[in-house]
Length: 162
Image (cartoon, rainbow, N blue to C red; front, side):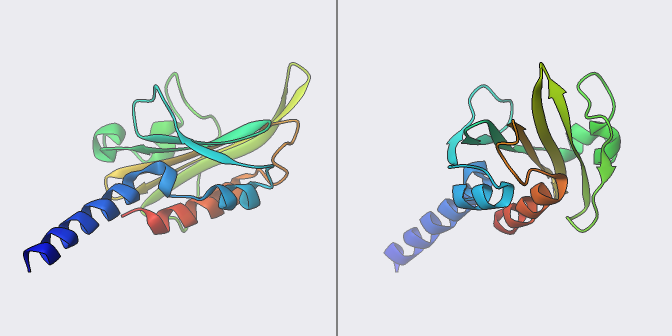
């Protein structure tokens, strides 16, 4: 009986860790097909203030970050309001329905130094965690990089977040 209890505790701990490891929220194959990207590799991002994972592909990447506690970070504001204002803001954020308590995102294309850039960022609040997905691609390396494609990836990630 003691062995079963220990295994149960270890199993619950492992599931909890997997659910809060941003590299476990999506599989590289899901990112590849979801964004229309070439081969994707996943690795923990270094030097970030919050747990983060980079899903890298030639010409771009998708970062998944877990920001917590959301209540302290947002200070009573909505995601669109908090992330769309201030010095490090994401201009043009709009509410994205159907993703939980609160979600906001923006996507688009631009040209930087003569190189086409596609990008999309999405913030989703689930409980006291904000899940951020931020994708960037140069020269259209990710053929399907749009806010709707990042939103579909977020839905998959949220299924694994506990």
